[in-house]
Image (cartoon, rainbow, N blue to C red; front, side):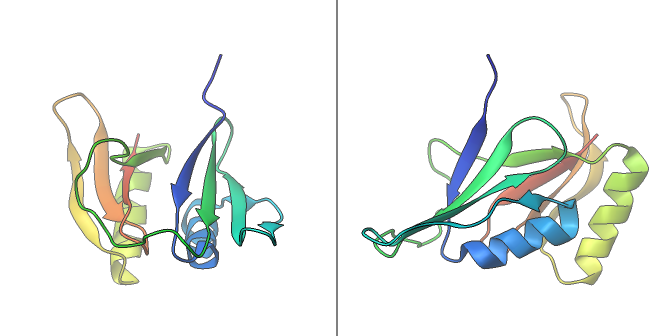
Length: 126
């Protein structure tokens, strides 16, 4: 068994798709549209393994919630400490919100934490 994908509700899946394509070389699927419900989604492949599904529909509440039960963050392994440092610096220079600069964590990861355009927490890790 394995996790096939994780899905995020989004206010604008195109903005999120473009963010993940730019910064993580994500490969998007063609958009899926259900005309009856207004539901739309993309699947993103980042390297190998599980995929990320970005979903939107007009009747979803998009008010941001900082902490709640359930989803907390996505961790993307970028390969090395140098890659964490370089990607964090490049993102900060482009105005991406950095919540935590690169550091070693108590559980042994080297990581930084950023936010995507809709406020989702992303750990850049080794």
